[in-house]
Image (cartoon, rainbow, N blue to C red; front, side, top):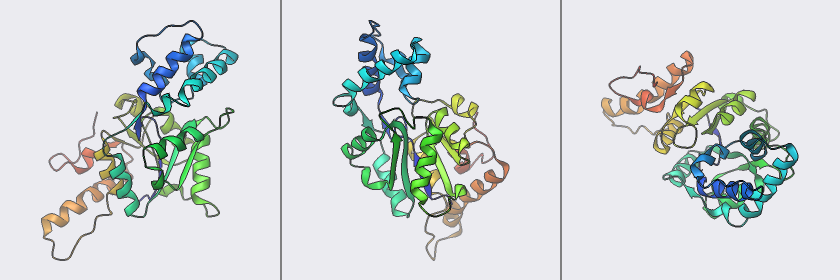
Amino acid sequence: MKNYLLFDLDGTLTDPKVGICTCVQYALASFGIEEPDIDKLEPFIGPPLKDSFIKFYNMSEEQAEEAVAKYRERFQDTGIFENRLYDGIPQMLQALNSKGMFLAVASSKPTVFVERILEHFGIRKYFKVVVGSELDGRRVNKDEVVEEALRQLFGDKPIEKNKVYMIGDRKFDVEGAKAMGVDSVGVTYGYGDMEELREAKADYIVRSVEELQRFLLRGTEDVKPGMNFQKIWQFAYPFLMFSLSEALRFTWCVSCLTCWEEPWQVCR
């Protein structure tokens, strides 16, 4: 069982679309670029902002830095709270905490903003460690964020990478996990779809918060004396399937691990 869990923030714990995309609009407008459709700005959710301004609007490094500054001008007081928790997130975090798991946030968003968002939604208490980027542009790449989160989580103890999951919705989360040698869990309810996560070679993929909770808690259920065989099998079956999938190294969807009728189906 893996009990060190690193969570991305945007698209994994919260849906930040309105806040991020309207702040991107605000930044673009300062350059005379009008983009009325915020749906077209969804690719800004996940990767470092500076990289996105360069990639999607052909800005120079200097222009991109100016755009990030304009973005933060609106984000720090308004956009930061144009955000919402995905349904079931607080309940999932509480359940994971109750099992003694160690939780961390590993986000490319500046740490100061991550802390404010977690406090705003009342979920900061569930995380032992919160790591983001720095406002001066340091530690924006996901591998750097994951590395620092692991360092803080384990402290003076050796880092046990075989006990860690990095959980996120974009390929950047998967790539950061792979760079640090830990397993990744991709979520498709955020802003990365099944195709993106499979191409990035996520170790596991889930499609809802409910599936994510079931996946992370598998093997922790209490089997009480006197339970009949069928109930015991219902508890044990997902864990047995998970153990086999570890050996085969397939990318599974959680529903495949718990599917009663077609346990060997691999989600396509």
